[in-house]
Image 1 (cartoon, rainbow, N blue to C red):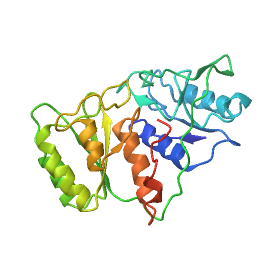
Image 2 (image 1 turned 30 degrees about the horizontal axis):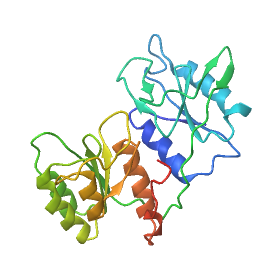
Image 3 (image 1 turned 180 degrees about the horizontal axis):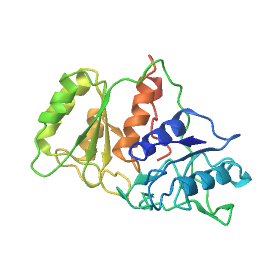
Image 4 (image 1 turned 90 degrees about the vertical axis):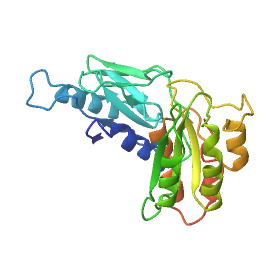
Length: 242
């Protein structure tokens, strides 16, 4: 079991999901929205419930789990959804796997787990660059030119960027930067629905990796782990089960 600050809890949980075989021993991550000495703290409740889940036979084979506010989430999809209330975590579009009630853990479903990746000596720098209406490629170019080995584009819709981004993306890939695309939408996969300049169709044709059903933060973690290896083999089918 791992206790963790809530701001980056989802990143660490997915890092563990991407690098460890959690079949034999459940791995449970938890934290609290309120410090232990604060009135109405959820620290002790979450800790006790995480222990219950970690000791439960039902948790075996479910991968890395996040236990928070009586709910059990998969590290695949969990996100911090509230900055201060005790219902701090959700899994938009996917829901929780189960719950903890009266000292007992119940899992109603189990997730599809990603293939664990070998971890190199150090994680390389991987940046996240968001997309917004009217936004040019300058931030992307700054990231590519300043030493990032990988860039995750937090794209729009089905996985799109503005047309003006395409020359910068092609230049970055040509220079050896690995680029992946996610969607800023909370639900739904990426899909080649269109063929306009900046569409997913053009991005993938240029060599951009598709990371469906992952937040940009989770895609960044998995890409960094893959790039920590000297070989590029880990980039093949990096996000296949999504």
